[in-house]
Length: 245
Ligand SMILES: Cc1cc2nc3c(=O)[nH]c(=O)nc-3n(C[C@H](O)[C@H](O)[C@H](O)COP(=O)(O)OP(=O)(O)OC[C@H]3O[C@@H](n4cnc5c(N)ncnc54)[C@H](O)[C@@H]3O)c2cc1C
Image (spheres, rainbow, N blue to C red):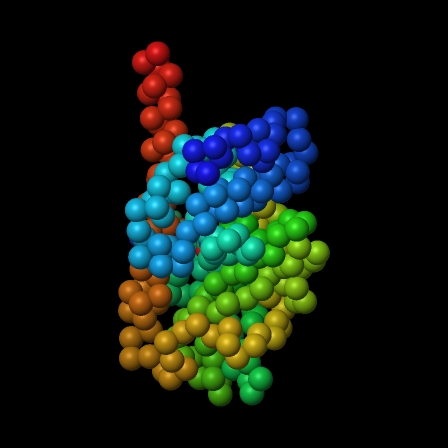
């Protein structure tokens, strides 16, 4: 039950004296508890139906920012957590210039980080025991030496037991003033992907590659931005209530 979530053992646990790695794992366990309690359908997530927003704005989200961050990236039933790997060390707001490549060969694309500035930055991709992490990785599609636009690829980053071959995740230092999460720098060394990993519209050269990325593939980012604000809004409500009392 959503209303009993604060009694779940992941939420009654006291993280204050835990080691950072245990706190990161707890963040995932807390997110999993919320996801399982809501048990949203794919339709509720896809269409941003009222229970989707109810979950994003649940009061507990403001108690653990790490947990709320991974909550926004889950899939139904919480068997898998997802990431969104667009930004690179050398390319933030200028996302249309990212350098990661996905070169098409007969049995699927090969994902590669060609330079240090092409490393993906910030999303939590580290190994967390017991959790499988997938990601939408944005990369420049290369077919027969021709650039065919930036597209999303579905990549398994790690299983609960180890990182997948060719994928490395270097955890960044903990951020001050918030609960820890495995924010990281992620690189790909000739990672062979199955053909079905290509989630783009078409392998053909797009007429307007910029519009394809910014309008077709990235519209959902706005939903993520609003979800993150939901946790902050709850936190402000608590502060105002405590101040008033
Ligand atoms: C906690 C956290 C989590 C994150 N999670 C993710 C994630 O899950 N997935 C992901 O892909 N990325 C993630 N990011 C990265 C985030 O998307 C980038 O930080 C963001 O896109 C900005 O890029 P940048 O930091 O490289 O800033 P830059 O692009 O370098 O921009 C910095 C500043 O420069 C100025 N500027 C830049 N370009 C222009 C311009 N053309 N005109 C005028 N001014 C300009 C602006 O003032 C801007 O605010 C995360 C970042 C943080 C902090």
